[in-house]
Length: 105
Image 1 (cartoon, rainbow, N blue to C red):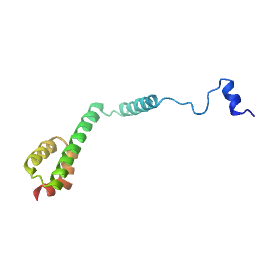
Image 2: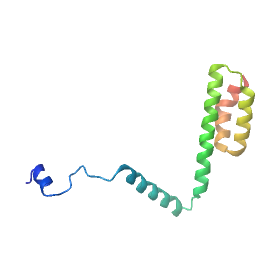
Image 3: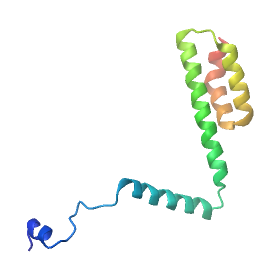
């Protein structure tokens, strides 16, 4: 049986040797992309959905801050929700579930 020091002296890689993190992430990303493409999933839709999710979160945070701080900016925020819900079903569901009642007070 070899000692750990003998392994290092022979030039064998240690057990801690692994791929750099960025390479691991790239490999995982490429594998996921190939799965999406093989399934016929439109990647451009995934990108646009991500943008609308980010915008929805920003408007939701603004709505929460407005409600907690009593800033009386309900009308401009209602306008933002109106525009956003016209494009995103996810935003529409969130608005109906939480923010419609919050902004009507």
